[in-house]
Image (cartoon, rainbow, N blue to C red; front, side, top):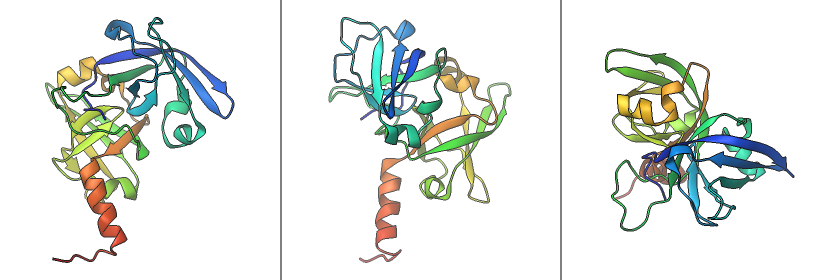
Length: 205
């Protein structure tokens, strides 16, 4: 479980094929977090297991084919930057919102508009994702907890407003139109939508 409050931005130092999967090595940079073997780390919004050792400052992850098929991790190359967050503990202050690191789908950046303290990014996403996205609700994009500022009238996308702190401390400040992003919808909204779908839209007292 994560909060979507990014703790550091790392740089991919290695991304190489490992069977049907991919081995990713991340330099945590200024975060400097030495994760214990087996720790859960959110990498660009994807929950991964650290397979390295605490004595090695680098973060090492073995990514399976299923994860590569459903996220942007398969396109990572040396030099790419990724948002990082360690899993929360029971005594951790709960900012952001509950994030599982289980990406629903890959979305696309449709537009980026910059203004004086008013930076907006619009994303497109599939129908299954948009069914769980509501105005002023929560959404996680590349591991960053965000508030949905609005949903497109056609229901095919949404947009968010980004404050300078988010732009400066995460990878979202470098987004441009056409970029692919990992999207995880709010787990409560997703659960409700799935329940209603299984019940055929029927509600009972």
